[in-house]
Length: 90
Image (cartoon, rainbow, N blue to C red):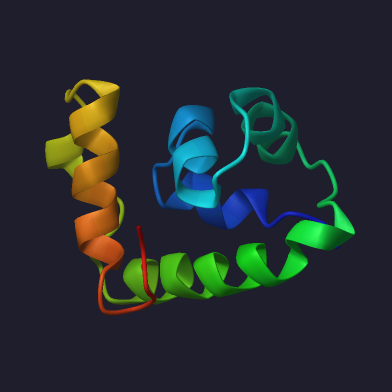
């Protein structure tokens, strides 16, 4: 499975955000943002979270200009809050 990197770039997510949302390393987040493939063991997780990101983009919730200047820890909390209700998040 190819990671939908264009969707995540449109949503304003960076590699650190992707790593936190998908519970992977930042290295994997960087690789995915550059069009890398997804490990077969992560396909279900990626599919569920990608569906939530797509719904948030379609609803106009992401990208959120308010979170761009936030520190990474607060940024991921804000992004998860935006995705809550579209999928179960941590």
